[in-house]
Length: 262
Image (cartoon, rainbow, N blue to C red; front, top):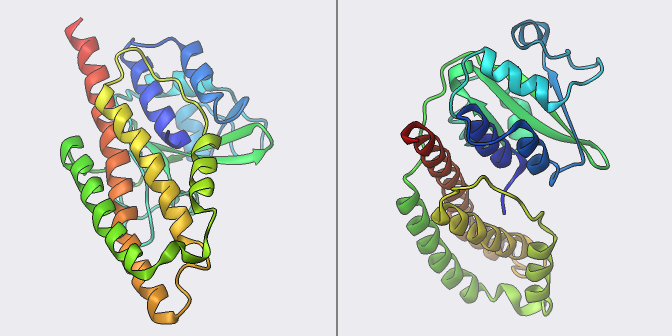
């Protein structure tokens, strides 16, 4: 229903607020890879966190969680950068390129750290931890607005794609969409995860599947139609990113709020 950085942001935040055990974090992350590794991107980050530098034997999640607590980390945020929009990464820095290449990062602003995942082997997800050079500014759209924006974007994109007859040469497009959805990992979330966040994350997977199918070759054959298709899909992709980030931000907010009230 999401991406690895979303799982890390929610579960690490829950752990930092006493709402989850370390084993719960590890179990949740294992949906993305049986082995979770953590390394520091450079010597400065290694010195700050105690993590091994990239190229040395990687550490496990326990050392990473301990480093977060030691450095005063509070809530995490999901960042889904694209070229031209790297908000949430604290300005230009060493994390920008890998985050852009992967399309995601978990940012711990209060600790000036960001973690970017990479599938380095079958069943192995390695997180490279970067020190942030600037102070990330929270810029998440409220979840209600984000959910509405995704709904509107779906409707507008659908009208355009119907007019372009995108599916005419894709008789199996519905099967492609269903297969994509079925192959996404089944994720666990902390107790108290807001139902609205879950609903938005589930819907975002469905919309992502539609996006992938619509972007495939065969629907728009002329250059002008291809441009029209890209123009129709761009706002939809932006809406999905906004909705996912908003859903994670709302989940982190509510989970940490429950702890403070308990």
